[in-house]
Length: 162
Image (cartoon, rainbow, N blue to C red):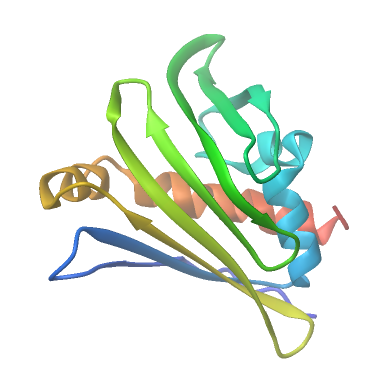
């Protein structure tokens, strides 16, 4: 498997308030999936380089709940929470995703792990939010930096065999 630096493709639909994120990884779906459900692994890669992640609640099963906080220089700057609605190993995760600063602005996200040639994975996340204003606010928040830097960290973690 060869590794090349790549950016996630982020697509905002015109007619529905969704954000789709598509990215390929040089690892099989089982490894990419594990990095999404193992709290120790998730804390190592999620978010931008400037932040650390603390898992505060994690029950990665259908019906479970989750929460994590992002810190910068020891100070909490954001926290997120939600529920796992479906956890299907190596195939998909369906969860809600909310930000403490806007707890009613819940996104419903479906994350799929598709096996592609060469033992690789195409990861697709589809987020559905309540309206276009919310969607546009997310897009303008710098989320693309967090997504791409987080996926760079995930690439490195997967390259180490995690």
